Image 1 (cartoon, rainbow over the protein chains, first blue to last red):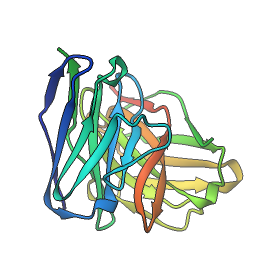
Image 2: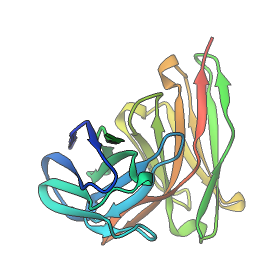
Image 3: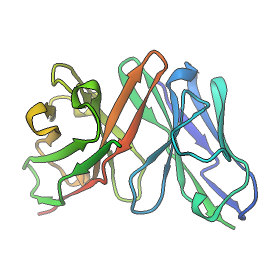
Length: 108
Length: 121
């Protein structure tokens, strides 16, 4: 089973700053099967990125995904107040889906 | 626009079963599968399993195998997740999501609003 490790656990930033979130897999994975989700308190998760770098419908272009092999990154180019939330990466492989433990982006 | 609406909160005793429903609208029901994810209080997301829209295929995460059953009902455009032999640590919000699969990748979108299941004596 592939384990996804996200870092940092918490990212303290100010609005307007750039956020860089990391997701590292325990072994090389296919870009096609790497997705990112955003979850705000009391809400269901929302799809942001699929296929490692494709934005979901309606997602602003300040969100971008990149990476390959074991290392993937979610970048928020300039944080808006509504972007402070928890972000999860997700992988599919061998008929199983798994999530990273999440990165919380909080207001500094 | 695809939308998933889940059933309301449940309180169950240890050892009991719970069945959560997820009603879909806004798309062709059998074209997509459903997946279930749970989130214990203050914790991350845990994938539980998936079922095809036509109810012919399913696969469960190993830790839930034997205790969970996922089904779909085309007549009501609904998916169901039944968890048996409930324990205190099954207390969580249970989410359904539409499962998108193809050669271009796989992801969960959209998600239901979540159903809180509390296991309490």
